[in-house]
Length: 372
Image (tube, rainbow, N blue to C red; front, side):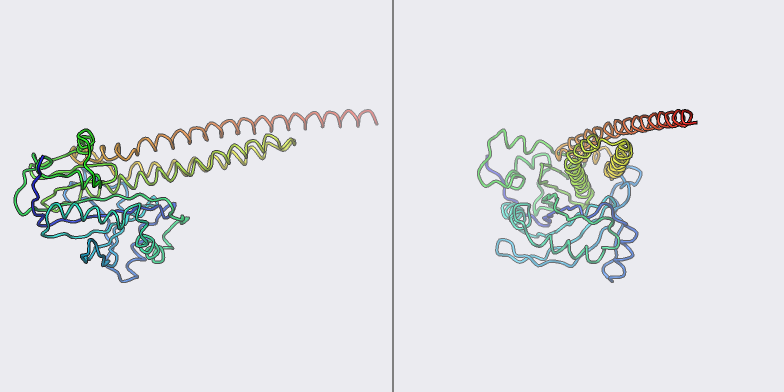
């Protein structure tokens, strides 16, 4: 099949990099600290074209504008706009946006792949680390239990606002080859692979289009609307946080088993205190993780906007957010069961200790009576 090579009149390539920087972020404090830096004003995020009652953030994140960045891609200099959105549950979503004007579709697709090569997960670019340190230095007092930010998620978007000549959305995937942009592959894909790649397509108006994949998306949006971009960012933030707590519980479970085993082998009459202390630690862990995962689950509330709800639900499925969330729930269930067992064992040990104390008192009374 031969494809057209229309001119992209205006568009943008967006590289997202999300990291977990703390257990929680005090967003009100972020706004105060950022204003003291005399930077561009912070903004409480909201979806631009969707009524608040239809789709809304649970706790609106704070959007900060950072200094622009000069980059060279494919031998051409570009000025990238840089922003970071901070979520109250500890995620920081960096966004590097490269405006594009007047280029062939073929060149635009190559540019998307060049951005991935320069700033994607395989590039290990120092840019993200520098931006992270810049934000941390400015906002450290607003971070609760800062984390090393070793866990991250990356996502790449190609967004076209206008073609030089009108391209019907209904036939766009037939007239323009979206596969090189969405796959990042230089070699031709099989027909079945192409169909799978283009399967998640969504349109609301006759002139817009969203195509989603696991790590990339193509968006055609002539009105400059960014709601789909924001929704994809939230879905990636949710995946990041669920992965963080999944790995945290993976590390805690073997430690929990070791502590339980040590408590069982304590072999002293005051072991009930060990069991009670361990049960309290496990209860605290469950409470903390449950609180944060509920915040993550409620990061975005979709009620009436059916189109955005479909895009959001498909993104959550593609990113396997629910699967990771289920794994977190299973591990929390194991810890809850262990807590209940430890609590019962602590109660049993206390009952044994009380019985021993009563027997000792009876023996003492008998001895005293004999000596009298």
